[in-house]
Image 1 (tube, helix red, strand yellow):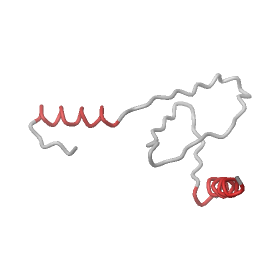
Image 2 (tube, helix red, strand yellow):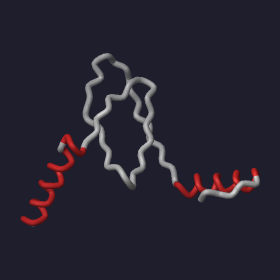
Image 3 (cartoon, rainbow, N blue to C red):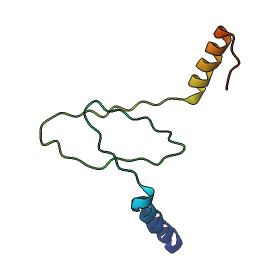
Image 4 (cartoon, one colour):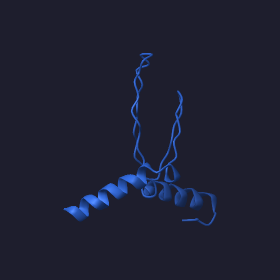
Length: 83
């Protein structure tokens, strides 16, 4: 367990290091798409002091659907498929 917690603490230090973090304060109407296979993402806390009733909407996409649509459109347009 000592080895695990030592690694866990080091991992946390790396996550919180400003050199490996990007912070962006989103505004009303902003959207973001993240490739979960390449980015570890999270949100910081907030207080809704203006009673804005914020909504956080999640959507998941499978790349197979995107690649399939590209192949279909390529075939319909008579173009070689890039995927």
